[in-house]
Length: 595
Image (cartoon, rainbow, N blue to C red; front, side, top):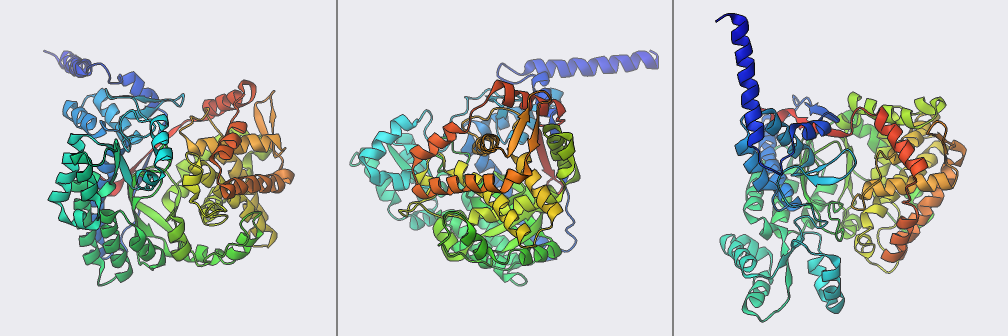
């Protein structure tokens, strides 16, 4: 047999094997073509920061925190969909190197579970699992507000536990009750740190308490994984104790926090501590994944390496925060801590909710912790300054605005807009005028308003700094351009997308009040910079007043007013953006996880 025939046979055999493997996947799995349509629109990024400055102890701790992160990643996936982990295991078992299963595994990694966002912004399963529910896996399957709201109205005392930020709502069936009591038996530490939980479950089990649902702390719901994470983080703390005692203390306290579901000790040590080369965001904070009530947080872990020079530079730039707070249209009487710890970091690895291309974090969110300890800002330098990711942003901006303004966006703009966005979370009002938590008072719209407030405070603060001579005109113009980039939408937002929804609201407000205008002939926007400061300030005042009033009804009405989507404006602009954009999604991988 000659070489050419042999080559053809080998290729044909390979194609037959791949085709057979693809056909072996039953109904419910996306085809290779369906998966490729999304993956072809995905920018792939590999983060590989220089870790040469880490000591041996820091490297040892890094390894343990990475192991903890892989566990937290599984907990996060499980919290988002009850079939996530099982569907992944089945897919991995079916994977024999074929193109279809490899593509589906990439999709699972990209979307952190078995539900994909399509190019038309729909959320659909790409594996044979149930459709996604608003409450993810934090509530009983099928639960609606129409079921729970009457119970909470009749027994308002239940809301404190059922709608707590770190409890799941469980149906009071024997399987759940027996399982959860078993976790308390297996892990006595959990029993001790959650006084009253056992007696509550036993009362339901005996029929003494006939409540149809009960609140279960995260640490009990995911007890085996949490206890493994507890041990790994404690061990990392011991590694670091001799040379970075502040970070070691934070890790030890955070390990305990994860078991108690009370983060105050770790939050205080995290915000007030001064660390050397490493930092870590650990736990469940952000609630925007909860589309039912907007109150349940989701797990994440970020491991970060500090850029000392850039961190010192930005710390100096944050002086005078009280003056900025006092200049806001609402909330000027509030006194704030001005020494916010801010750090510029390179991401070593992200897990859970934080995995992706998010640019910055400010935590904690708890208003009581913020009042007592302040907050910490983590700017993710190797995402914020990644040249390919900036090229994608610039491409989008240039397609949206008139050609004369296309070069207004430079790398500085998104960096400083993001910095002051994160500071913006700390400024403004921190509770309703009658003392209620903002997120709960505005439920389910709390995240929408908190993120929009931070966007607008960023623009307001940049104007303040420019006027004071602390931000030059070129950077200020780029920050303003970045504020417009922020509101561009390639699809009409879904109701469960707080970020995209509040961005659309800003865009519509800017259009209504003359900061933006749309040219139907070119399907481009013009930015009217002379209207920028008054319009952004006016919208900020509206948002702060809604937060201060704490009326969910008023918040919903404002959202409804400014989320209109018009065919001849929004659809045309969105189509222009889609046509000009090479990538819609970003898949971030980490070099340290590839060994």
